[in-house]
Image 1 (cartoon, rainbow, N blue to C red):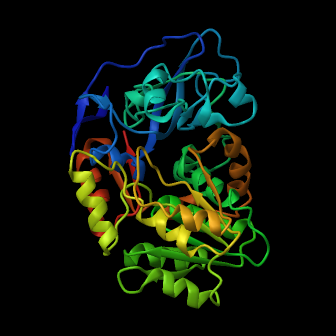
Image 2 (tube, helix red, strand yellow; image 1 turned 60 degrees about the horizontal axis):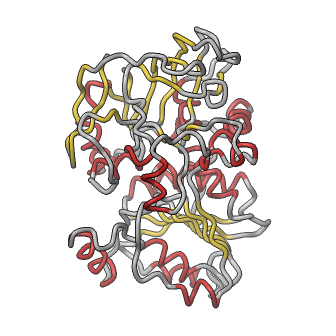
Length: 391
């Protein structure tokens, strides 16, 4: 089969690789009909995630048709159309029983590696380094899906297109969970840093959950336009305005009630701390991540407010304003998304016409074009916000 394979920083290739096969009785094989490049994949592309190996198959946002099931699979059958969540979860461990699926105890065979870095291991994740299991990803023609009775969501044949449901695999639940973690109350103002795909869904979800105002922060005009035109957000371009001062002016000096960091470890800015972060990253990764947005969100959030962090962080950060965090009595909520918890409820929002996630797609390309699609997405050329690949 064909698959998108990682070979190093800024080096991905579409190659012929062996077809996946059933390994465990609870596995299924899915023929991929649509897959996408996630902003998190760019962290792999840019070389910021450890434990990648040459030839690893990328991709954790995918859907398709079940073509084979193991003898222990009871809930799926050949021919089912499914969306597969990016976290791999067993469904029976302590964390899965609490619906904390991204913390599954049994799905990462390389848990010892993650424990050395983070103290404990999260779940396994498709196509996201050997630190998180070394599972082959979904930017391919076929994928092996472990714990097939737990993860995949069957999509009824009711006329919904792939692009309407594909993002239930990751970015729609991720944006929704980011907003849900804010505990939004009527009248709240929510500030969202980053208007990429996750940020767009965080903005839309904040309104779904009752926010009165959402202020979207980015530097790319096309992403700010989409946040305004699709969701009705107010917008700030951080290259044209000082964000903290603008947020204070927009909120009468209080600051936003809730702040969402939908950027993560590769944030940009134009101040001295940005230069500090870039230098420390370059010097043998003395600092793994650039917490520019996280710092700004903590400083801007109103006293007693909440900072939600769906943006990916992988290692260590410097200059975190702990004094502001403590003295303003802020709550921080984070985490890889517990996608399984949200898929069915969000599917109902789609079926009811409350949101059409396909609004995020700007580019549709063939799987063979994946190397160019990565370059296009990373460099934000042609106003690229989201790429869907078709095998």
